[in-house]
Length: 344
Image (cartoon, rainbow, N blue to C red; front, side, top):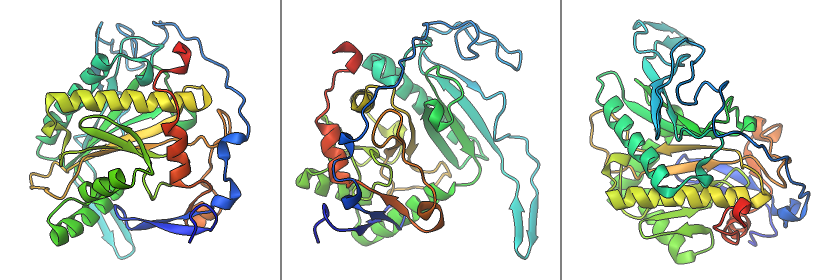
């Protein structure tokens, strides 16, 4: 089978799901439309922004006059700690109360920055804050999972351009994480090693889908990627949770985060939208040697700054599908400069 010529399905060992790849539909996707999006010229401070330092949020609470990172409990949290325990179990009608906390993390006091435009030392402080929040939230008796994520860009539902991310901590383990947890546990029980450690070893050996590499981290396009330029960041060392990282690994993580998002921005010379999130061991008090920390990036753009991939029709009713191979996407990203296009 020729991956560049023939339709085929690829298996995701982390979730047990498949993706349909149809490479003949768009063998050279970057030769389509290449118009640039209108560049936003935002001020470093916006008096109307509810995330800028010192500003009052819609709840009436004022932000700290922070000079680095800043975290607060979401004023409109999707999860609440005082939700009364209740349950419905009536044959096909089942429901269960969910307790949790939703936190907002401001990456920088500067309204006009994004991760690829920040200094690595500043991003390292974001990683440090992730560690603090994962540890403190995970210690709560009713919290069994801590989800760290970032939505960037209006097309990904981000309502405020100020550089920020979120953390949702909850009593149950979400579906996507549960699927990964089960598959990693089955693999670990068979091989006595983590699934992603063995996978990363093979990817480095093949060197077909590697985007970036530093001393302790690798960024790659997964063999089973669904989104056009989907990537994953993995530590080379087996690390089950972010708090296990050394100081050097945290710095390398920050460096990888910056360089990968620079490549994203450079792809179509636009502030590249994506949803990104860290998957790591649950905080249920159990040992999880099967877990290998990783960060997913799901960007929607396909051909240009304004042409995105929609998950509709066949994707919604049948199976995830993509028109370019993971190898083509990795090559395209790998060839891009590590210097942000605004500085070139």
